[in-house]
Length: 169
Image (cartoon, rainbow, N blue to C red):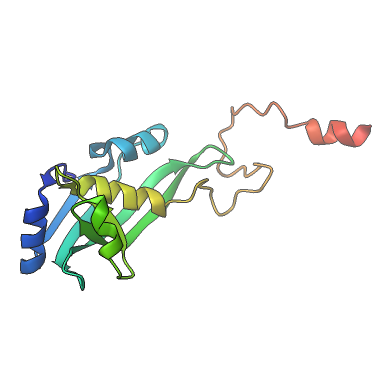
């Protein structure tokens, strides 16, 4: 199951001091945002995720977010399912509030825990979503969308003859 727990900032500091790790394997359907993205292509995929905590150079907790697996998305050229590998390995500095961001001089991105804490599942979803291409396509799909190996036989192609009509004029 994806980690929906909100972890208080003081607990994150404690975890960083102990070099605590959390691991899980979850179904794509357990994540609302990933499920929405994959719904039209099926949700059978599972992802492995881990969060490893340590103390950063500035004294702020640092989390290493990892995810591995694959997502079934819709090819934006032929509209058939395409399986995309997911490989996420990000390091984020965690600060308690916006005012602490200026204190972070490390090369890591910063995430604000806020007064309520930090939701591990949310930062995982964010990192996975930002790693995906804006328009996933099969390697063999052509610009015109005529990759017959991926398209469904009954697919509607309202503009299929447009090129020929334009050449006639």
